[in-house]
Amino acid sequence: MHGTRASFDDLILNYDPKFPQERFVSAGIAGALKSSTGRLPGSVPWPQGHARTAAPLPSAPADTNDLSRFSGYDAIVVTRTAAEAAALAAMFTSDYLPSRWYEYRHNVQAYIPLVTGRQAPFNDHSTDMARYYHNLGLYFPCTIGKARVLLFKSGLHLDYDGPATPVRKLMIEIAQAVRPKMFIATGTGGAIGAEVALGDVVVATRARFDCTTQFKNEPWATASYRTSLLPTGAIAAITPDLTRVNASRITGARPSPTIWTGDPAAAVVTTDFFGFDDSTNHHKLQGLGRACDMGNAMVGNAMQDCPGVAWYSVRNASDPQIPNPSGNIEAPSSRLAGYTPNGEPLRRRRVRSPSGRSSTPVSTRKRGEDRHRFRVTGCRRVRAAFT
Image (cartoon, rainbow, N blue to C red; front, side, top):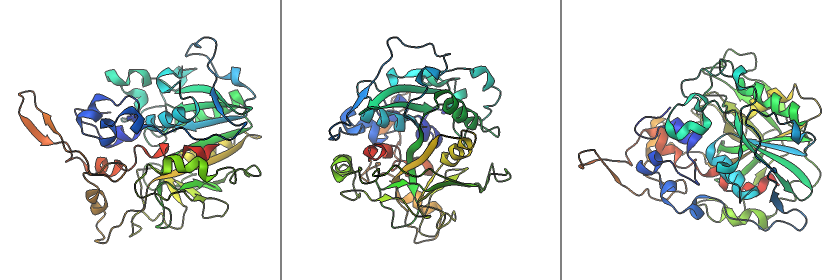
């Protein structure tokens, strides 16, 4: 999936803010150059009676085990990227970051012929991706107050695994094994519309597909799935005390993020490519929802086969709408070149060639990588919104 330098898709899926891979350090990715405390979210003042506690198993289970030991848990929280999982762990299992989570390869032989995507981490043979090779996910249990919660980082990805969409099978498999009261799909997303600010949160009333490339001919290419009704008081419980701690670390964010929810416009839009909103509405996302991602609608699709499980779609805006006054879709990417995820100037470094001579500054990267510097750490920003 990756070569001698960090690729766009590699950065999206695999950048680990706790243990940045050498290819991201060498590429000058700003987040990878910070201390670990600067790369992960800070702790928040949990309300009395709702503190989170990691709940490690007495002994590590075999990776071939199913998840039935967690049957009847109150919730499953699923995310997809390494950075999102690191943020989730920092907030809920801070002594057990993903490097200590349990590996999930139950029935993996059934998935191997389904995952055909060239860029799928599931098929990545490289040395520093060995843990993810033919790995369906990572997981770890915790408690939040009295609630039992299973955190799960998916090893499969809608837009990278190929036409068989095996991630749907995986979501059904874990939901049917655990039979939780609720299933929460969460992580980062791109803001849709100028009113959605960096760091804002969309607690969606529905998740819908807007597939215009690889899945445009699927019967679900524009399907929409309503999320379950939120428990009474859920939004009110997301207080400024919980969100300010990490919102204050985001350049350009509101002091307390807006929680977009409760109306039809509060939708998450799942695209089948890395789409984003710009001021010209190039990708035609405006009017479809408040945030775009690459997977939540497939969770909604899968949950249609899991009656009795309430499901929710939560995304935070890890990049805002991009101004594009020239009308050139290349320009929004180019204007972000040389900036960190928090909008700070990128530290320029030169990569040494084998001869020792200085080569091209690493800040001159593919346009997608430059833009993604706003995105790779987004899921750490308002993780308290999931409580």
